[in-house]
Length: 278
Image (cartoon, rainbow, N blue to C red; front, side, top):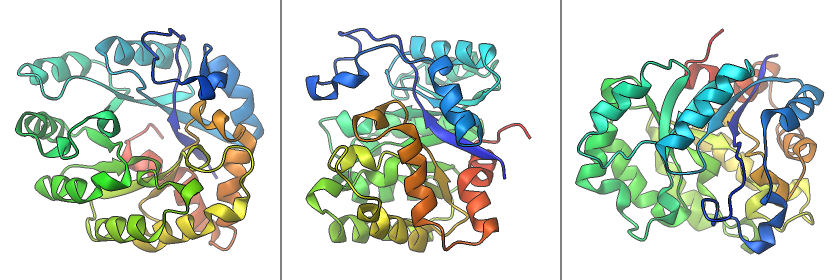
């Protein structure tokens, strides 16, 4: 079974650039590089990964491309360009010289406008992704799901990935409202979902694996084993769990699945969605 971690971040910590890292997330106030990650992945049998932007700048995209050139382990990059920009086509064309760039993401969860995804300028940028066969990672909270549903329906031929199962507030027991809002996405065949970031939304370090069971059961019922992918969200996951624990949550809660289903979720679906090298 080829295991792939679909959601990894790397950075050289800078307090101003990384102001989103609060004091209570102090463990993240340091540099994180592939050299720190690779032994952890090796111990879990994970042989490849996708690097995802954490900073909204083209410099971040270039930085991740550079890491992919230095580390064969990084087989895909989800970068950032300003999809609202009038020259977005030129910027996408610039990065098209790097086949490792598989798609893009915007940190919609931090936008003041809840229906940001429906902005005309943003949607024009997303249309440019579709013309180039690029993916889009949807980073949102449950409150954004109704807008996200309209958004993905505007682009039936665009590949979308919902990050972090849309970040339900697990620590507060948020479930039914999240599940009802997520359920319609199951009928959108061009939308997949990333099992990542669970412990970040739970009670840090005092959770139990069983706390996540109903959330994983729900996404499995909604998306099926063909449209779910594993991601660790390392190093952000470290606020709530270490890498081994993060992997174990999926293993323990999906033990009932067939080997073929496990293989899809652990790696096969990720490779197909992001068109990673064989």
